[in-house]
Length: 333
Ligand code: NAX
Image (cartoon, rainbow, N blue to C red; front, side, top):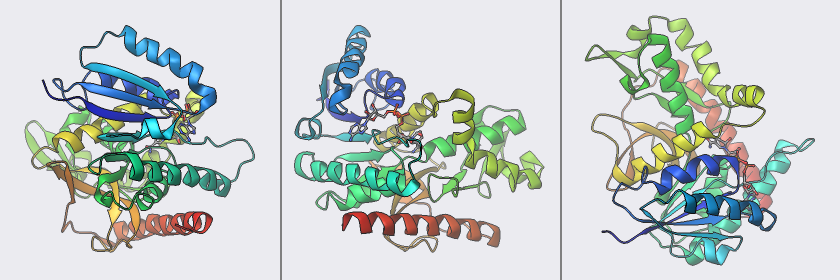
């Protein structure tokens, strides 16, 4: 059997982690034959809760799970990692402004980037989930200069899955028959869910999404706002933010990094923009359509962009530029 992969989950005592850890530990992400060492980081006051999570993982009696290491210490958490899933972050409190939240969280991701730089393998794949995910990811990448920026990505797969599901429900089919939706930009309400290149498999044949759905007004209106506002709708209903669906999306994202995307399919993830793709400014983590092979992503080139899409892609880029500039001014990175 292969050597174990060493995987860190931060925010390990939180609600997303509670849905996520079982899937990772039973082999849904790194493979059914791949042993795992799970490292679980949370803050000191959460250590008693984390102990309970560790007990439950032990009680699952999972064959692939070689060791579980709970900790509140960076030097333990980030050591020799193959993969890091950074979920933990400061939640928004009553009366807290967006700016204050950004300030608190980019400080966390700066120090976690520095810990990756110091302790992790240079090949580590880092997935940032904690919000604001794109900007946190950028700050972590900037704080770990010896790890390639391509190794960092942020989660927009939940938005991607939401978009697939909305189209599938509209067509009365299973979500597996919807492919190549795109989430452009920020994991926020300015994100642009785009179906211009999406294909729907109807009775064995790929059909352009607009022809399958037959409702352009919906696709250019309520579909977009439903996906953009879905996180808020879940909070309103559950009084808690998305956890089960977020955990599933994290698994999809990291599994695709590990094992690649299927031929002819692309998925969305927030990756480093060099300024050479789709007119998106450089030095942002922006969600693009990507394919993945040999653990390396590649932005899908050459998709036609109409004026409708261009305006939405630019608006979400502008928000990311502003977020980055605010974060950089706080941190001086
Ligand atoms: P919870 O509040 O349930 O859990 C967060 C955990 O992180 C807590 O246990 C907390 O103690 C821990 N934590 C705080 N600071 C930490 C630090 N410096 N180091 C390690 N752990 C730390 O939140 P949960 O619902 O699990 O959500 C976690 C994050 O995911 C939030 O920022 C949330 O906004 C974000 N989300 C991002 C999504 C995405 O698609 N990118 C979707 C789901 C989710 O909303």
